[in-house]
Length: 67
Image (cartoon, rainbow, N blue to C red):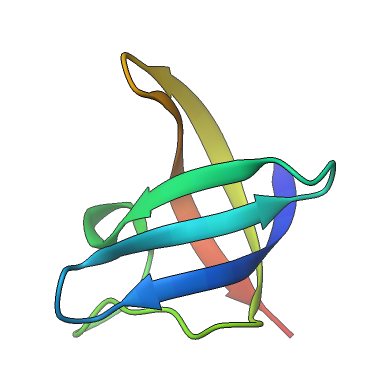
């Protein structure tokens, strides 16, 4: 599991970026968020996630907000 902080997330567009522990930007799509109901993130939230390599770079999946 990787740790990071939500850099920004657009509820309208359904995606955003997480800043990883080493400063890298990792794409996150709303389908990769583990939550009941509406899946969204807020800037500054701490998260844990798995990272998958895609054609466009790293993408966060299995994203869970932590306290």
